[in-house]
Length: 170
Image (tube, rainbow, N blue to C red; front, top):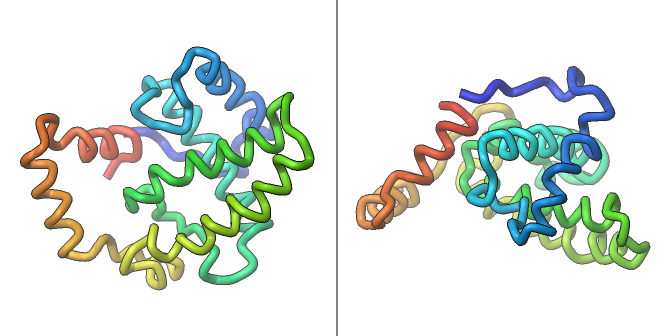
């Protein structure tokens, strides 16, 4: 089980640039670092640490409505587990990458961020309201049953569930 660190205990130097620099090199290797399946255990932990920093910053700076808040239980929401690294890397490439331009940042704010915030209630599922109140309610029974059925019939059944438990515990 991976230990989750409180964002305040993570030195500023590890919060964005230092924690992600080795991951950014994966792009050069043709392994997009926003896809968990491309990461080994150490890289996954680096991404998780970067996401903790990003979510903290996002909630304090970019969540201007209650419906924009990313709840602490985000790892329990499979769609969030996949979308947040993409959002983080879109932010990183438009703000931290050496090739970033003001135009890249403008597109991030006017398109990428807005579209993510519009999709956030769907990404969180039926429990969005209770999750934001700190009471994770999980996925709907219908969705959970569909995922279970899909995993049973898929050739690598259970791999997503096993992976989520290995990375995030629970």
